[in-house]
Length: 144
Image (cartoon, rainbow, N blue to C red; front, side, top):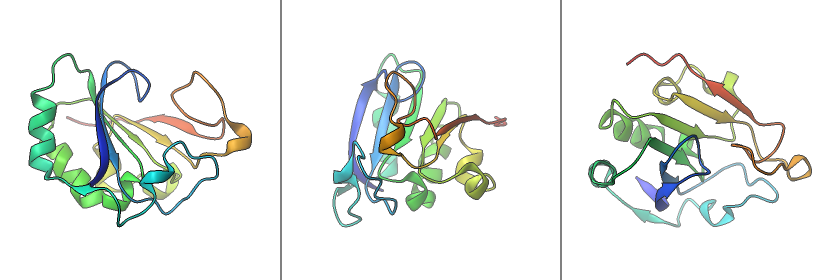
């Protein structure tokens, strides 16, 4: 899995205390993006999904895992592999894609919450679980 980094405890990337994996590589290049260093598909570092899963399991006081970007759906296979190693975890995924374009993917079906839509700087909002008002929070009916 190609990642830009990991934030082991976050209060702003989903509900509760989240373990956040920032994926490397993004095709969207949203103007005003807070993580433009994650755009380059050649950047970041390779990390084993097994190592990430073990680190997650060894991190205390977590309410779940969040996949953010870059763009998680650009690395669907690796993200699916990671989430299958953490089957009972609450999962949030931030994506620039619209829900209608990803809803039937295996990765989307492993999420409890999808935050969908590209960031639009002119619609930026503070204090929300998303960056701009055009984005949507979709709570899935994930089966466990």
